[in-house]
Length: 305
Image (cartoon, rainbow, N blue to C red; front, side, top):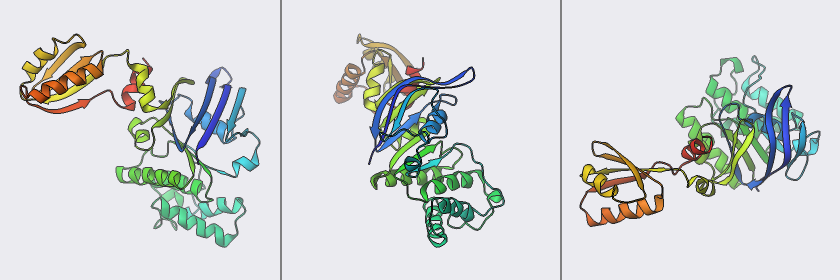
């Protein structure tokens, strides 16, 4: 199952502060990454999608339905907010269990689901601890557990990887992928670009409440072809290689640092082809090749300039 979001002229403001400004979207993907710096409007969009906020203007649909004042749709959603608001003296398992009970499950079923959700996020040994004793990373995973426990059809996660150590982050990323494979539609936000890239190729870029770009990374990459691209390589004769590359009209400049050579080009396809030919003839001992602007970070950097 894919998550499907539609917006027409969607705006949300708080007094004089405009959080989202005239957004138009029609996006569908098994996992959709919501990317942008802090203050871009990611949390506001998520709160609109889970019915916590009402649009100031425009139209918003999640899976074809209006989120605001829609209990039937909300029952199908698991939401992990960016900031936590726990009952600090509650035990972790009691917190998740109480939310399951609000979904209408019996006490026995709520406990079973709570134990399962804590196990999914790696907190199976921490369920008996009071929440105030949990570390920041554990609290983050507890938020994810409560979003999962009722087995929702849709999962909306607001910066769930923030503050996790590498092992915990890898576990949650793997869990998100697994849930998507099982048919859960996922929308996950982050300001850390490589985290989203590890989960999905489908992204929505927000900046200052506006949509910068949507779609697959490969398609968005085409939007910045007018900008110079950087290619790095290691060579046994980096100076000779630099002199040779500067004879090509598509090469704008080169930078040398020992055996490391960085080339800036206005035509990356032609440049990669030229480098491939030079590597094949063996004159310069090219040992490695890396496109520095073939990732989400470069896309975002160029689009916000």
